[in-house]
Image 1 (cartoon, rainbow, N blue to C red):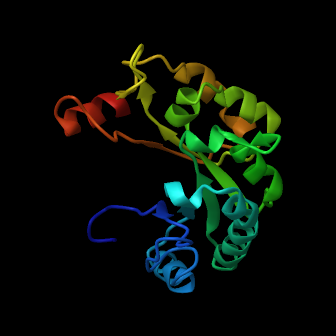
Image 2 (cartoon, rainbow, N blue to C red):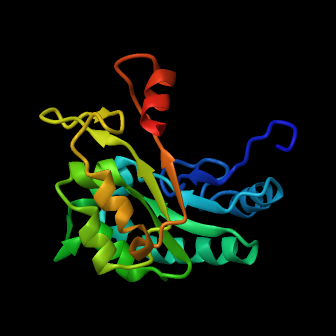
Length: 197
């Protein structure tokens, strides 16, 4: 990576619990850690649960898998984390799936990569989570939510109060944040540039 000037800060990996793929938490995880360590990555993140992985049975076993994944990355000097969408904010028994995962995983081994858009889209305030689980949210995905449609839009074109959120970054435990432009109504690079500014 030295000849490009690029740095790999973080990488995304699926669980591999239903859809098997190399480099997932359950298939080739040791090799993935070795590869990411060689290029200097600081974080490895469980990025997504496919719809048929969102069952009570899988949720109940997931904290153990996340903790074990985090133990292995820690041994290589890499922090493990979990990335959310909106489905984690659905009920799981008497709590929300997201809160279940936070409460059942090690705060040291499993940090959270909070997607500010998906949290807001689910109708929840990230500030409440920063207060409830301080220092847990080392990584953020930063994108805005359009008024009315709740569609993804450029930072500054939507309804999310980023000033308030970034004012709470120390309480949250923020270490790195990433502008993420999943979709764009115009030129993707112009959207990214606007969001980044």
